[in-house]
Image (cartoon, rainbow, N blue to C red; front, side, top):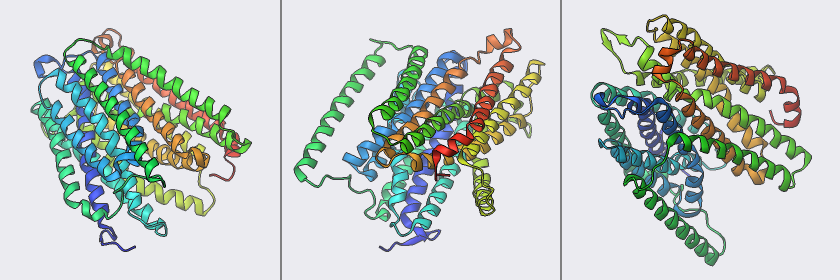
Length: 499
């Protein structure tokens, strides 16, 4: 197999996927800092005037669905659409969703959020899978390098998006920011179609059964189920938009948290009880359960960046730079900038430590991620002491917090992702990866629910409230990190040869 290697020595198709994902992440991260502020913003400033509790619930549900819908999105791509079509459909749906947000109506706002979650569910998992399909099996080192370049595209978009979209949304008009996100995704879709030819045969067809008749029957069944699902969702959307039925976002968010938690628990019970696991497999799945809980806890803190921490930036941080106030959403760019700087450093560090047999185990790295997250919230506790004294604080408090959180994510996320693929029984790898992403969804939802506690009136009435909120998260994270360290020895034993 030969390639036109014209993108940093890689297949030209990598550039297609690099820029598609860059534009998608620009729109997603750009809106991430804008969304919560728009919902809690007063009607006089063009915002929705919702309470912090309602806004947090909506934000949590939105970010939860972004991760959860990746599971059916990947499944439909594998069995019906093919990876390439799924990415294109997803990009188009995201674009329409952002343009719905650009309209100044509450009904189109919620419709837009719903469409973005669906579109992201199609695009996000499948564009990553396409990267892997660009490389033949014998080019594994090149493939790993290609994913690193692709990862840089994700964070380049994450860095640039808030700088542009938050500026337009916060300084000019909220809906200009949402429109800019839609324009960015539209550019990504056009770029994707114009350069799609460079992908060769990668992801062109879905997986097919050996028997043509069985394949036809499977596709017919999936299409029928899909049309029924879409029709039911369309009816639900119409009923909601016409206010025939109403939904309380806070109740729905809390109910979803119970459903997610119960669903994960029942899944692990099912695996241990009915999957006929060997003793070694049961031990490894037990490790995955611990990692699931650690990942959930971590992202319940990390995803405060788009909600509670953005609110802190907007209300309590001195954002004057060169005589002008910069947008609160710009802080979202900080994490992506730190990822671009420190991922190469950590990749080099782990290799160096491994060469002298000092590379920390997976469990130690995960505990370090949780501890760094906890220290980030300790930093916010200290900053809150200055706030209750009556003054806005330096932006460096948030920058330091985001630095600690980003270093924690670098320690925890890629290590956890890799560990799940190695620990899961071969026949359950796909399911276990789905459970891992469920932990991220659960964490995102929890962060949104938690952000609802940052009620401005309540904080003004109780000067210790904000400190106590950050203190709660800090204690949970530090305790979780300590527990993982305590479990290090038995977990290493259960992992066997996996490190």
